Image 1 (tube, rainbow, N blue to C red):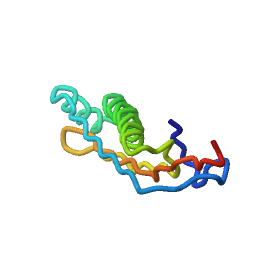
Image 2 (spheres, rainbow, N blue to C red):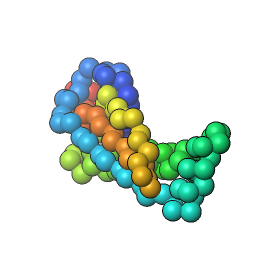
Image 3 (cartoon, rainbow, N blue to C red):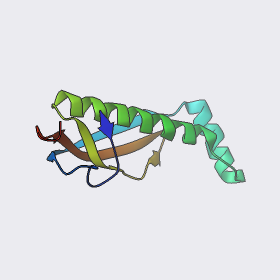
Image 4 (cartoon, one colour):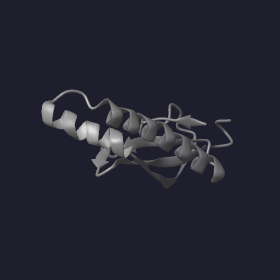
Length: 107
């Protein structure tokens, strides 16, 4: 399965399919959330939230690949990420792109 941010695949022999959307929401640990709020007051990197965003991205790409495969697509093109949003006690992320199938001539 190929996941790419390119708007067009490298070869033009593909059938572009439907828009596929994945939503991922990860909850933060309440103790770490309090620590990050204190860090927000003092300044510095918020490593716990960075880690949550990285996990959400990995999970979202995995879910997108699974969704595309279940619908019979060979890959997803034009993948976009919404801006990850740190919400009260968690992180949310939306990932989307168009499924595609290689045509018989390209295979």
